[in-house]
Structure formats: C-alpha cells, structure tokens
Amino acid sequence: MPNDPSQISLLRMLGWRPGDPLPDVEGLDDAVDEAVEETGPWPASPTAARDPLRASTAPDADLLLPAEPEPVVPINWNTLDADRAEQEWWQLDAFVYWLRGDFGLTPQELPPMWHRHPELVWELSALRTSWLAGHAEDAHPGAPLMWLRDLGDCRRRLRDWVQRCGTTLTEDRPTRLTTWPGEETATSPTPVTVTDRAADFAVFVADDVDRRRRIEADAQAEVELARAERIARLRRSWGLPTTGPEDPAPGSVTSDVADEEDRS
Image 1 (tube, rainbow, N blue to C red):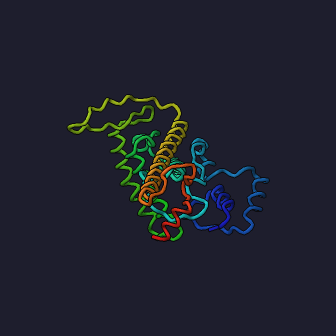
Image 2: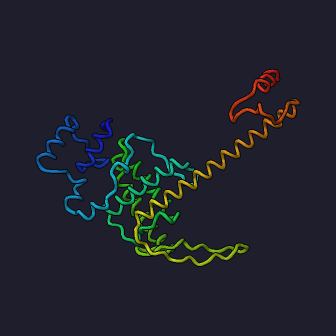
Image 3: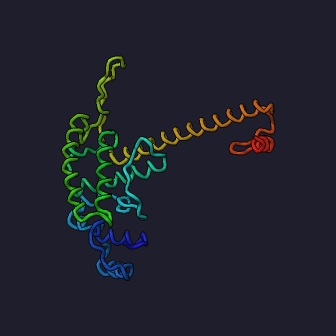
C-alpha cells in the first residue's frame, strides 16, 4: 500500500479499489501526467466512462477510506464526540453513495433520507464497518464473499425498516413510535417533500455536530462546577477563605492549598 496519500488518490482515480491487486506505483505520478496530456482527464472509475449519470452521483473516493490506515472498530453513534461524528457522517454518506451506485439499491431499500432514521443509520453503519474489515489488507481472502452475504441480509432488513418508517423517494416523515401506557400520545408525523437530499444531509450533519458540541460544553461545565465545589469544601475544612480576588483560575492550584495537600 503506498504511504503517500496522493498516490492512493491517483490509484483510485484510475479505478483501483480496496482489495484489488496493487499495480507497480513506481513512476505513477509521471505516468498519469503523460496519460492525461495524451488522452485527456481520466474518469473517476470504469463506471464513470460508461455511465456519466451514475458517475455524477459517485462519492469522493477519499471519503470511503481514510488516507491513513486506522483500526476498524464498530461505531457507537451514541458516544461519538462532535469532531468524530462529523467525520463519520461524511464517510458513511460516501459509502452509501457507493453502495447505491454499485449495487443499484432501490428507494425501497435505500431511501434518500436514510440519515434522518436512526434504524437505517445503525444498519448502514454496521454494513460499512463490515465492509472495511472485509476488505482490509490483512483480511481473509474469503472475507469479501462473507460481506456479500451480510449485504444480502442487510438488504432484507432495510426493506423491512423502510416499509415500517414510511419514508419514500419523494416524501419523508419521522418513524412512527408506539405510545406505551402512561406516556403522552404522540402526534402523527407530517410528511415533508424531498427536494434536495444533499443539502438536507449537510444541514442535518451541521445540526447534529452542534448538538454534540452543546452536550460536550454542558458536560465540561458540570465538571468545572464539581471541581470548584470540591475546592470550596477543602478550603472550608482547612479554614481558608472560600472566595476572594485571589481565587485560582480553573485547572490551577494556589500555593496554600498545595502546601496543605503536601502536609496531609
């Protein structure tokens, strides 16, 4: 595997995909430059040459796999921080575009607004994790075939999820939830017309990242408050002033507190 991310991008531009045999990358940059001068720009993949419409919806290849190899681990969307979530959203979106283009998934299996339905997000995210593991350099030769079996199972579940949630190619609404005894009756969701899927996804990701940043800020504020309360209790127990202009900044320790801690 080339270490230079630019060479990896060039290989992908020439149609190479993870799992394919690696060509000789010696002089790759010069060879590509010469070929472009003679024949014009290369298509992003063989698919682009025979199907421009499909190529226009193809994802950025660099988003399918990170430039630097990373351990393949399951994604827990409930615990991702804001920065990691933003990265994972765009990589998952690139994978979904690739999946739709190469396997011709229908809206009954893969609707455009999948990102607004958690059941579809978890399903597609798990499928991408399986794909990454099955096409890694150290994967078993039979791993890609096992992934195709996973894909068949996933497609059946996707059809079931889509039928239950009611999202379609042109309209979307939140997944209906069953109200349990003692809960307030949920209002019937109103369908929304799908006009620009890509724009909606960008807005959705921005809102999700902003929500996670607020949660992180609130959690950090609670940590700082708990720390301040602990310092105040220590000061009271040692008979020190609890407030005043000499209060330490967050993360610092005054000399009197430090000396008292050393003596204790």
